[in-house]
Picture 1 (spheres, rainbow, N blue to C red):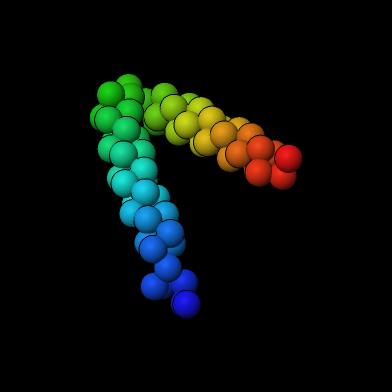
Picture 2 (cartoon, one colour):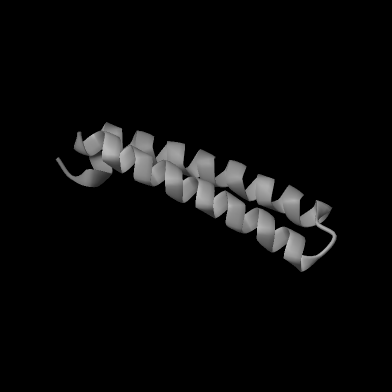
Length: 64
């Protein structure tokens, strides 16, 4: 069975797409409410750092 026909793969694509859309909306809100580019950059970096830590935690859970 190819990856494109795998229901699990399709579900993952849908979940990822929904997550990216939600993240984009949050970033848009942060950009609109930021007084400066520095404020927006700070929010962006905090968001990315949080995601990185979550991904690292998930990798460690999977490897146990």
